[in-house]
Image (tube, rainbow, N blue to C red; front, side, top):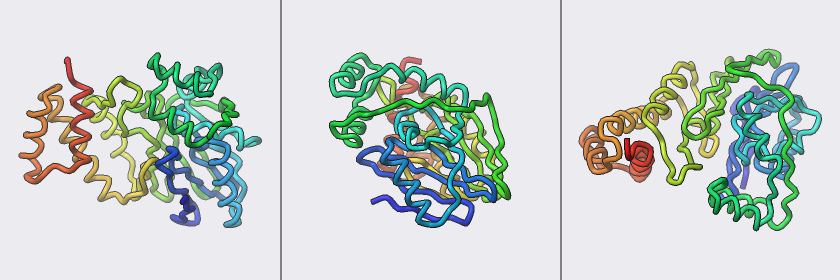
Length: 285
């Protein structure tokens, strides 16, 4: 069950759905404009978000910003007709590659077999759309290179192209006056490789960028909003595992033992998963 959550008068967000891979969608409400963050994974997803915002009597959105090109963040764009859509130039280029694709089962299976698509996403598309795949790729109307700042009236949003293992075009959004950082999927693993992976160099670089924002609240788009302290704990774990993985590339036993010794406790399931990602990202170096 998706829920629209009011963080403040300026920032609202809708919870994700794991089964169909619906990410968190956000809305920044200014005095003159409302900005949507991400378009969702379907017209149904985007339309439901708009309906929930309207029920709260919020200003109708006039713009939508995309965090990256992956299907679950852009397939809802046809429902946002009339809005200015904003993306990095790299995101537009990624979206352009999707335009000629068909989305029926045979086409999805072929792309999975070729390594173009992954089974995880193909199955989520089947779950979200059922047998009717009337999917249209709508390209953004405005693009930027590295950074763009939007004045929505009383609140400003900084869009910054940060890249990362998950998507080279990844963009984060910082709601300045609210001190909210919307991560999108920037800190997640690369799921399009043969094995899901993260690399020490990209993770450490990206952590330095993200920690430069003076954020009090951080939104993981397939998770939840967390406070600065919780995010700092996540970042510390990532830093430690990334650094150890850089010292023992591809060696799961050494990485696991070193990390367990460093934290002096039993390693969590999530930390074990991260270690596996970094092993996959450094094996053979």
